[in-house]
Every structure is written in structure tokens, then in C-alpha cells.
Length: 168
Image 1 (cartoon, rainbow, N blue to C red):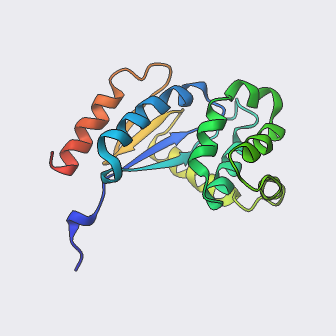
Image 2: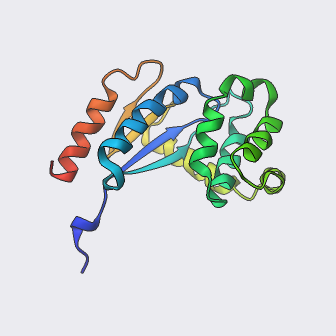
Image 3: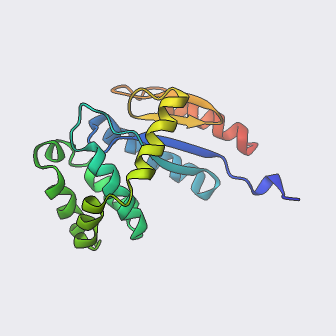
């Protein structure tokens, strides 16, 4: 028998690494991490959009970065350079990998051999199934909250749900 108090609420952050709106959403994620610490689990979920031709490769690269233990640093660095990713593509991903201390050659190999394709495809399929249509989108306690250019009010809505789930 498990103790339900050990279960942390999960906030799924449906993200696309070539999306400028996802870069702006990082401020909200940082505020939520500061407020809740480890009490709220925030998970990056991939939802590459067809309009961004390097987003799918970026999602695979992010998975390799997580496998190497530097996923958060990598994703934040790539999100800070969304315009450059659009212009340069995979060479930028390899460059960022080296900048954040990853084995850039291994990341490049992962992009070639497709070892993380299934994770990205599964995230995208799940996102479509629950109603994700764009990024950023947040899901907490089954509620889908669509972001976009305006993040106004989203942090407050997420905080209200998280506080309820945590009994605050």
C-alpha cells in the first residue's frame, strides 16, 4: 500500500524548442520552480510543430541532453536562440551541446541514428490525443492550459491548481 502524500503533482510543459513563445514561458517555469521546489514535478514534453523545420531534431537533441544529464541547461540554451536555430539547424544544436558541457559528438550521433525518435513521437501523439494544438501548452491535473504569445494569467491558474493539489 502506498502513501498518496508521496505523490507529487505533475505539470507537463508541452514545448517546441524553435518556439519563441516557449522561450518567454521559461520565466513562468522558473517562478513555479522557485515557489514549489521539488513539491511540483515539471516535465518537458515535446510537441514539434511542422512550421519549424528544425524543431523535431531539437526535440531529439534535448532527449540526448537529458540522457547525458544536462537536459535542462541544453533546452534553456536552445530556447534562448530560437531564431538562430531556424537559420542554422542541427549545427547549432551540436554547438550548444558543447557549450553546456555535453558530448557533442554523441549528440550528433544520436541525431543520425534516431535513438530518441520514439520518445519524441510518443510525446507528440499523446499531446494531440489530449488536445495540444500549439506551444507552449501546460497540463496539470488533467486541465489543458494553452499558452502562446500571451502568458497572462497562466501562472496564476497553474499556481491555483498546484496549491489545491498540494493542500496549500
